[in-house]
Image 1 (cartoon, helix red, strand yellow):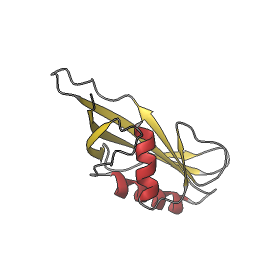
Image 2 (cartoon, one colour):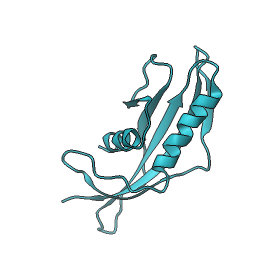
Image 3 (cartoon, rainbow, N blue to C red):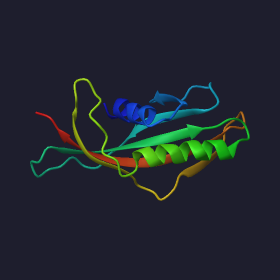
Image 4 (cartoon, rainbow, N blue to C red):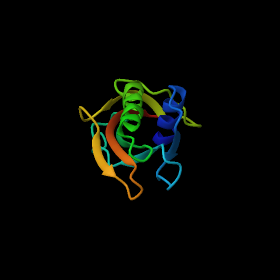
Length: 130
């Protein structure tokens, strides 16, 4: 599953914030959440490629925009222009590329507890096995 692969890529790249897949709980304050988003139309030419998209959401401590921006930048630097390793067990397929689809993160404002949130969208291409 792509979220498993991306989570392991981020933690292996040095992200120390807790990383959640598919949800973002109320605690802890500083956290990263990964969400699958609708990808592109599957390849119709007979080649076995999937065009996957996902979103990285970072939340910081109350009132601390600088720290959450640094966390988001760390995620971007690990993911953008990367070729994720096939971490899935069993592997879902070979990754060809991963890159950001915007030039910067989107500020989401502050949540009800005053914690700043940012999101950044990414795209990956993966060759299907079998």
